[in-house]
Length: 288
Image (cartoon, rainbow, N blue to C red):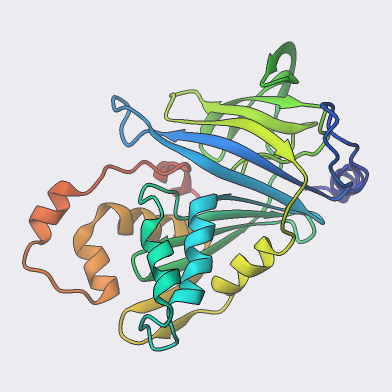
């Protein structure tokens, strides 16, 4: 990515106007709510995640499930260093959270030119990083209105998939859900050409908490560690992180091997495992 491109990006990020609907949003921060739909297989009905958030503050965006953020916050309050429950009330709140949620966080850091993907599966956490590369968006004059936002269309082959997005220049920030970024305005809607994944903006408002990115980043540090026999944190390249997480999601025997869990019913659990298709297809990494 050229330095000229980043200078122009940062100038946009630092001088952002208010939203067209009149809601006041500060020049260097915003929070957006999205719906995220993903399929476990091409012919299946999509799982719906309706509490997704996109926070942007001071040159850094983070996309995450609001319930997952709440889970990680409650873990700190509910459990002690020894792993035992220290606050029953907070533990009860933790148990009451919906089980269907997205368990990873995506951070796009325009200041360091990095994308950071933070994963959790059982007692395993993974931090994957890669340098940002500019999506080659093909901009179109085709337009429409989505949830009150005037939008224009753009398409790109990016990270192994063909994406069709609609962005709004009403919010001239080159950010969007997941790792999607680089359009002339906030990405309001996005879908891959196979219909496996879709994101839709529901609302945009003032950022209510400036510390979420820092808090989450502290839970997935840039140094590996292990606590006890089962809790392990890995720091990997994005390629290796994606490969490891996909295998943890799809191979029960590998999950038990990494976590140190024993079971006499691995085959039975494997048959019950939910199908999983990663947003970045596995084939994308073969020549990387």
